[in-house]
Image 1 (tube, rainbow over the protein chains, first blue to last red):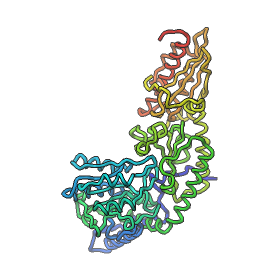
Image 2 (image 1 turned 135 degrees about the horizontal axis):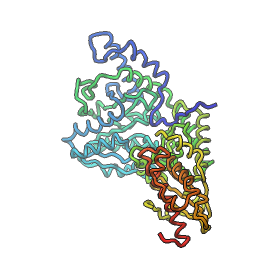
Image 3 (image 1 turned 135 degrees about the vertical axis):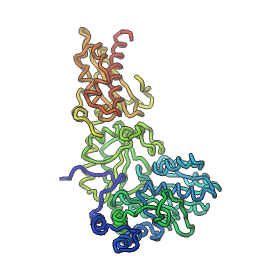
Image 4 (image 1 turned 30 degrees about the vertical axis):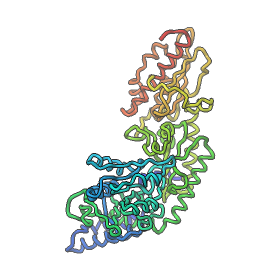
Length: 406
Length: 130
């Protein structure tokens, strides 16, 4: 019998891998030193542990350990990358290019910079979620100082052509930052092969602890400098002050090592499970739609709209399964997902979307259970749905004049 | 979001799900909301010609659990009531009964609108004004 509840929301966060916890424990107990203490064993031990973690994280993305700056998480990494580069290179230019489906940590940071006088181009995506490289080329001007485009999207799992974007950025002499939070550890990601200059990473998306992230900042060809966003003791090459989260970094390092060593087999297995989930749902239910590119997609991601069934009510029906929805009702803003909107998914279908995030610890048995629950609840709610009834009667829902104010 | 027990009960065991014939002159149909807003309710009433009492009610709802519960409750409440009594049902009564949080108050408003729209439709069909 499958153990409930089932966690299948691995884009939001991932469970801590027991191997990671084991590595961290000594640093939460007897090895509590401050990595900046230079005069005693406690400090040396902590510093050594931090450097070990740094090495593993660098190895995961093909970087030099000296290029890794630790932060409190990916939101801070994104802020430091974009604000840090904008402020550092302001003399050179005032233009940033990003994309509409970026995480809020990028979008809101860019909006903040607009208020400071920077100009930001928010590139659109096509209906599969992909940025058009010609749009990108055209957007770059001699005032462009930074391109920030994510490697893989957190909602629809769509993977951008990072290598080509890196090539374009390099050719035009523009720095390239990518939010690689969902990509690193899940798909091959190498900062040198891809000409990435700055990359945001997060521990808790790769089975590490929350509260620790990293920023890859290229040291040569080109050497990237960032203006810090936090003032203080000048830790992390002056780019990020603050006492290092030693146990977090140790855990992050262990998580990166496990991810690197198991990436090939793990991504193949997640892909197999995801495809089983997708094909089962598509076989058993009519009018289901995949949101985002099917092939250029993270192996564990499935974002699907179940027409005529509102997302939150579907979540309520599968309450022993943890997934998330792009429905307005589940968001604080009461707006449906801006990512789905950017893909041109109509608001009617955005309300019916569910994001499944399959991870390392999901089993085939769990996937089968989730599929059967979703099928059962979608069928039940469609019997309850006036829209399904109307569609079956042949009424074109788009032609109905909806009385929103009755 | 945590749901109240009553919302969960209506969601799991919705009352009066289904459809009444729109062709029946004694049936009034209210369709409110819009798919783009994430809520559509269809509420139907069957009115007894002689007594003017709502003798049956059915609903179908596209929406969150609170929307389903609000419309399910609305059908329960209108049954056995005269049109005047049904018109007196306020969304705040539904909010109270289901313990809806502020963010879900629009679900109760929609249910009240659905009752009114169904009654309006019946009146129109039966030559009443307004």
